[in-house]
Image 1 (cartoon, rainbow, N blue to C red):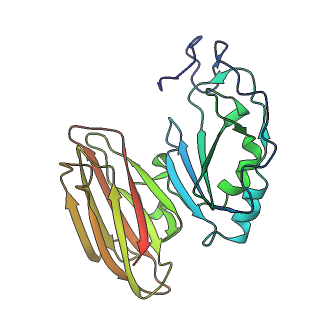
Image 2: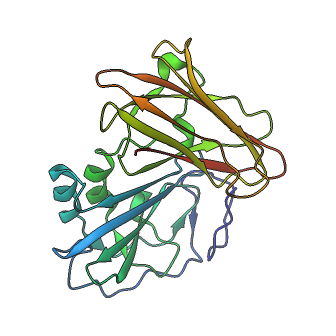
Length: 254
């Protein structure tokens, strides 16, 4: 189970066990919303013990109108009493035009385990609904059940990396057709990683690469042109050798 920073666990109820020894979140709510007119970027780091981990970076000039509207609806609240164990947590970092950062957190059931300002989880859900990020627990070993994602969507798709971890599939479409796209694995020290790009059927190999993970930058990467109107099958392999956990995958047009 995940080690909580400030909480003393009472019992072993996994998903919603309350911990009464948590300190409350700050009482004073910010006078202004988290996302403001001069803000340029937001980073969302999702962590879920049971497979909800991924990351997303949204820049103002590339976000959709729906995403910008969802950001404007984020609301601060006073957190619920106590800290719930092993629930989804979203860390938010906003960067304004001057490069200054503001931070907040949203957690299932609006609980809090830190001193950070808390965003109402219900007001975050419209933004989450717009994201195409592959989380650790949603990656499929079957191509027919694989998630379809678009390049350049701001996502760092996450994959589990344990010993004998099976390879997983994604279906990929181009963001800027008829030009090279790069598939880049990261955070892979101590893990053997591999990428294999196929046609939509998963039978015709188009490009592949592998790496042994001797350092954090020794990761599988490949570049291949993606055509308009086509779906590609990407096979991602990540297995722990000396270090477990998970790796991230970014797909971008060059």
